Image 1: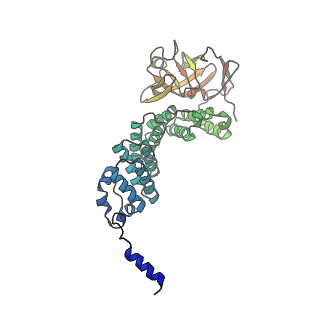
Image 2 (image 1 turned 90 degrees about the horizontal axis):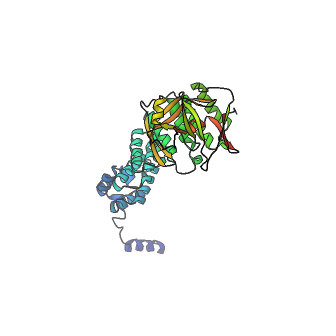
Image 3 (image 1 turned 90 degrees about the vertical axis):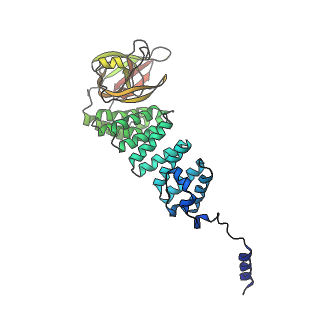
Length: 364
C-alpha cells in the first residue's frame, strides 16, 4: 500500500462530516423546506429545478429575506436558463405584488409571458406595471403588445400612442417598433391612411437617415390601399414665425369648419377643443381616452379622427385627432387647437428665413 494512498485515507478519516444544511439540496424535500417561499411567489418549482445548487441557494436567501430584490432577479434568471420560464415570470410578478418593488421585475415578467405567447398573463403583468408606474413609456408599450395579442386593437393603439407621448427624451431615439406596431394595428382595423401616419412621424423625427425609398414604399403602400392622397399636384404654403416664442398661427379647415390653429411640430396630434370638435362633427363614439404630453404637462383627450383637414391648398384625409375638454384659453386666446404631426407628417416641413414652409412630399 503506497504512502500516498494511506495519506488520502487518513485525511478522509479525520475530515469533519459534511454539514447537512450545506448539502440540503441533495437530500431535503424542497416542497417542505421552501413552502413559505413558494406560497409568496405563487409557484411550486419542480424538484429538478429546486435541487439545482444555484436555485437552492437563492430560495434559501428568499426564505431568510422575503423581499431581497437581488435574490429574485438571480432566481428568475436561473429558472429562465433552466427552461422554467413560466415559473420565472409568475415569481417576479407575485414578488412585486408582495414587496412593492422593483418594477424592473414586472418588465422582465411581461417579456417572458410574451415569449410564451401567453397574452392574458402578459397583459396582467403589464397592467400591474402601468398601475405602479403610470407615466412609464415602457409599461405602456408592453401593455400595448399584450393587448394587440389579445385582439384588443383600439386599446393597443392608445397604449402605443402613449408610449410615444410619455417618452422622456429625444423622440428620435424611440424604437421604430413602437411606430411600426401602431401602423400595423391601424392597418388591421382597415384604417390605412391612419396607418401611414406613424411611419411618417418616425421619418419626420430624423428625415436625413429615415426618408428612404424603403420607408416611402411603406407609406405609399398604405396610402394606395386607403386612397389617401387628396391631391397629386405639388403645393406649398409658407407661414411667418412671429413673437419670442416662435408661434405660428394658421387658418385650417377641419371637415370644412374653419378655425385658428398653432402649427406645432412638437405635438404628436392634430388636437382641438371639444366645442370646435362638435362644430366640425368629429365623432367621439367609441373614442378611447389618451394621455398627451403638452407644454403645460400631461393632459387627457379622446383619440378620434378628422375626415378631412385642409391647410391652404394642402389636404389630408382620415387624420388621427385628439379632442380635449379644455379651458377657453388653454391653447391661447381665440385658438382652437394644435396642428400637430398626425397632419404635418404627411408633408415636408422646413423652417428658414423666419418662415415655416409646408409642402407636398416629393417621391423618392
